[in-house]
Image (cartoon, rainbow, N blue to C red; front, side, top):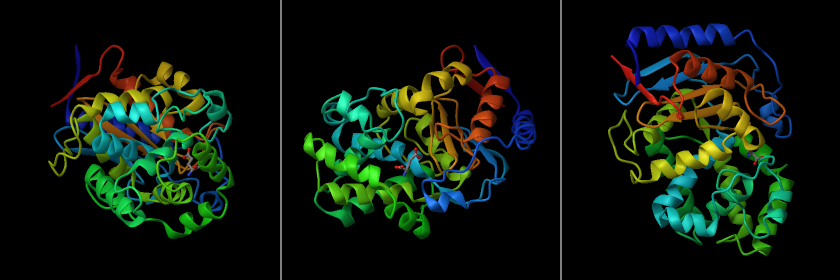
Length: 320
Ligand code: GLU
């Protein structure tokens, strides 16, 4: 069974979600990266993109914020596209850690296994895999091109964020070198970490993130530019990673209440995907204790619950 809705009712619903969630200002900006602490906390935007390319949005959808860990999704797709999904499984893995995003214990517990390209360890490992290996400039170009294709327009590094994060990423430095110790870094560790830090510092808007989500929902075909960005067979793989670890140690709770695979970032963005139906993104800087945007979670949950959309029961939305 599919949920049927008219485009104007969907627009009303997104606006209703915005108005209902806007006053709910729980949580706090990320403070371990100095730049993020100073982003205005009241910012809030929601964007939804349909397979037709139609964009439904409300609030601050043009504000450029730090993509942070949502960047782990495009880079995972990029290396799957370059190496094939099986090789990424062999070299990184696809298991949920059940632990915080930057856990060193997760690496020690799984011995030599970063577990998933969607946690810090696996993401740094993923950056080390990006081709051309050994060529920092070429790797960065591959990332920029892929992100632009996915989101429909180029993203630029927020210089101040990159500097702020590079000056304080001691935990990630430990991760990079611990992975090197276990043979799970496939390029220079410092260079791989720098690329990871730079990709986390890319600026993105909620609208761009929603277009990226919709490209995933549409099997790699960007519904706005109509260009095929990655191999269609990778959609199921990337969505499975997002569903199992997108909210780190709170992923199970999130899937239980929302029914939509989604990936968060400490910049306040969340990207959600219902394959075949739509991509959605929301942004607001105040986070809960696991580093997930409070308003963005509520907004996405509000919309999917009202639509009755859930990947476990009814993933089909028909907008007429
Ligand atoms: N750049 C951040 C870090 O590595 C990303 C964390 C996140 O968004 O979850 O600490």
